[in-house]
Image (cartoon, rainbow, N blue to C red; front, side, top):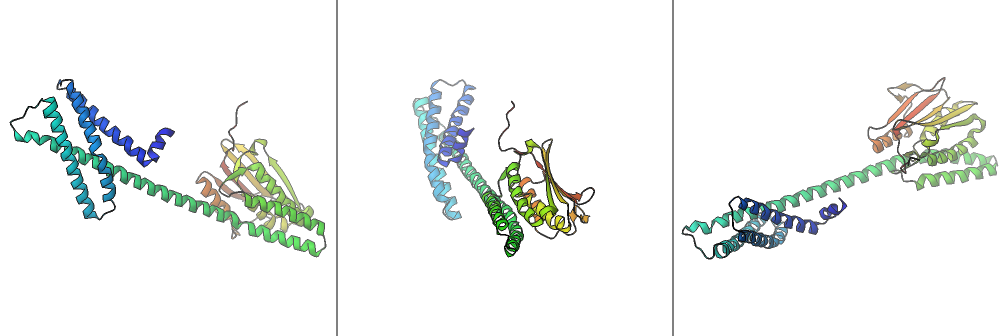
Length: 361
């Protein structure tokens, strides 16, 4: 399969392969048809000579056609027609010599039109050769245009995903810098220094990972821990985090930084509204061929209409939906529901994918 792909990817190799295969096919069809008429064995040699002559004479047509495509429409049509007629005439002449001089040993027919029957047949064959040549070239051109359009669409698609991902960072950065500024004003330099270090590590993770590529959930959780450690400095004992991650979920691939805005949302609209005992629960499990991830809080909750929060005016949740749709098409779900006994729960369902294929022990 790879070998044939190399043939189709190289125009020069493709031409010679199809050109030779076409004339070989012509010789085989002509020979099989001749068997029905009980021809002499020398006829096989005549067929080979005629096919070789056709193979040889049509090679210059390729370069004439290539030149004609750069000319005006009228000039192209005239040059193509003249070239086909000349080649067809030469081929008919060679076939006549092969037939009357070699096969018929110099015999001459009484009917004059017998000399021209080969010319018409030859003209039809060369016109077919030219039609196939232009047909294949036009097909290649259309395929190349489709590939270019697909490539442009893919690049735009990737740029769109990157834009969505990087829109999220300024919100977190603004909140964290405010917290660090407050710690410095309070002269709590040690805590502020720790936050700067964690912020640096978190942003390095955020910027080093291509938004187009997916990362193992374990790697994403490690980044979330950095983020939550920063937020715990802000909220102290008002924030606690529970992790309920099935071990086999850790190798599952997820879009990088897909969970951070969910947790940021929970902190902004739930934890910050509580005076104590704020809790965020993050769960991940496998169900069939899907990875299920939940982010739940015990905050005051919010009004939900048509599966969306009535207060959903920021970039966080809409961006998550757009990123998931860009990466998975329709094969995902993003559900916002009320948590029990209170708070909100955001549930994600995406295909269960692994970075490496698991081997049965």
